[in-house]
Every structure is written in structure tokens, then in C-alpha cells.
Length: 215
Image 1 (cartoon, rainbow, N blue to C red):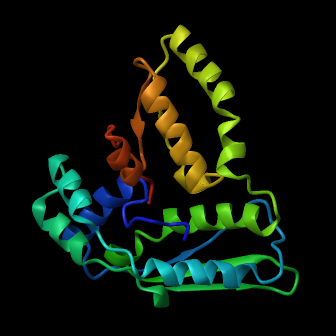
Image 2: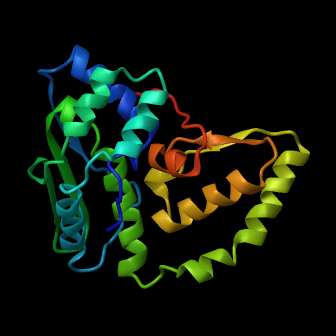
Image 3: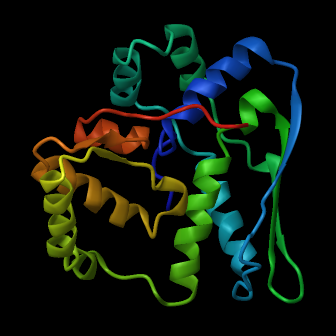
């Protein structure tokens, strides 16, 4: 299962869902996936995506995640209570491929519900692509990048530069993003200021950080 938490998403999706819930409860929307690379995906790829989507229906906000969100202070308890009862509805998503292998995804429903699909779906497509094409590395192989990543961290600190992680939607894999955030949270002195991924911020006890999207 690629998406392992209901808050394995960018922080701004939660703040915007709260806004949509309060201000636009009747707004019905339709999202369409745009593949800028016009990628040809392996045969059966859409079915793999659908399988991951079906599994997301089982996700629940945990007690630990609930307490973490409440401690943020800018998410009202009423919204956190809503999120505790929220469940992904796979019927809101349609996934298919054409004969050439191009991937098509549409999401349709009320904004306050469908707004959470975007980030995990993009993360699923990205990670599944590497799995389906036989390019996904094991955790042991990924750990070989630690030295290179630490050298980048040292260089950033030498320039007194500050940065945060915003890589969820385009990540190579969940395990790799988790590895990098764990590494930076442990090794950085001051320049790594947080991650937009709320789930990983929770498990590594670092600051969830983000912005508001153009949507």
C-alpha cells in the first residue's frame, strides 16, 4: 500500500479542505489529470492505480494524528472532528488507459471531499511507475544515497540557506521521502525547517509547513 495515512498529503490540502467545508459546502467540481510528458504507461497500469485507490478507502485518522493536528492550533477542533470521520470514496475517481497506454484520471464530487485526492494520486502514479517499469530500488539500495544527501545538506548549511521538503506529489517513493526527511531531521543543524507532508512531520516530530495553492 503506497498511501499509508490519511494525512500523507501536503499541509495546504488540509487548510484548504477546512476552508471549502466552511465556505463552499455545495461546490461540485471535476478535476482532470494532465500528463505534461505524454507518458506511455505499461499495460495494466490503470488497474494498479485503481487497486491503490480502493485501499485508500480503509484509511482512518489515528488518535496520535488527531492530537498532532489539534496541537497545530490553526486547524479548529470542528475540522479535526470532521477529518476523523472522513473516508476516501473510490467512486469519486475514474482511471483508465487508451490503447497506446496514455493514462487518464478524473475526480468528481463536492470540493470539500474531493480536494484530498490530488496529492496522494500523483504520489501513487509516480511510485507505481517505477514499480511497473522495474526501476524501484530497495531500502538498502536507497540508503546508499545517504552520503550524497548529507553532502548536499552540508553545502546548504555552509551558505546559511534554509529549505523545506515539498516533494510528496512527485516523490520517487514513500520510503525514499521518509528516508530523506529522517536523515535531514537528524543531521541538519538549522537549515532544514520542515516538510509539507503532514504524516511525515508527525512521525518525525518536525514542523509541517506549507502555503495556499492556486486552486
